[in-house]
Length: 389
Image (tube, rainbow, N blue to C red; front, side, top):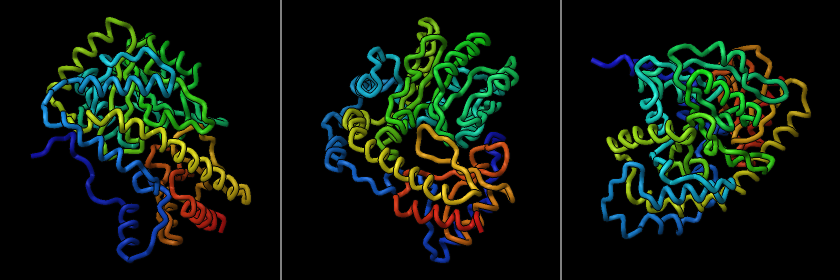
């Protein structure tokens, strides 16, 4: 009765079962995997947010496939104010309810069934489900670690074939926290031009560079057809306010045709709602208060992690340049899943095992740096007590 594209294993895995068992017992768990900023103790401008949702034009239905112009203009202002990019044309932007929806639009635009998209490894685990739902195949290319993460370009060239349609870049990558360097951007453009591929760039964590320096956005990339995805889930810490976008840029003729086709896709669904579009400017402005708080906590927790790791010799924290996560390399004496389950059962701490993010081998744990500081300090102390026992 059901399609093959939804033939997923739906039974809980061992890690999920261990979490459910512990919580059912009433044990308080220190969650060092938290990714929801609304549950991480940050104070938002409640009144401004709620007022923005009461715009009188909410009662008027104005179905614009790309999204309301004033909302797209607010996104263009964000790129000007936050990244010094003055030439983002609101007409090059299409609003979506999430970056996941943006991915689905672009996959549909570029791919026939069983065409391939190149994706980084390690990276975000949602790609597999998005690809399944769009009848697209994923082929991974590795990020390699040598005092920092880099794209393995020889492997990228080995991965491409006649069915490849695009390369996904996450900038900075989740969870490695690595930005694409200018040299890598140039090499990616050369690679895509050589094989007539598009670039799909996920920039949801772009604003969270730990050194405070602004990073270049691919929204200004003109060398090849580029689709840049972002949204206020991370920019303003508002994942419940479903506002995201994709920007198309690159060679003029290719960009014009891509936008015309994307507009038809968006017009078919018209998924954006009026209240949030009318509130977009206010909600984007929330970043000005939230981001300094988030970055302060991220840096504080990273400093605490380094302080505790420096007092032992078993584990190593890998370099991170941006984003919300830290990777700890640990002795691979068991699978990462077994280790994560042990940490739950022995010291009631929840961390993500590396295999969630498609690390090629065991020996990695992923910790969220937006965890409240007291919980993070105690959680790391418990984790290291087990690893050094």
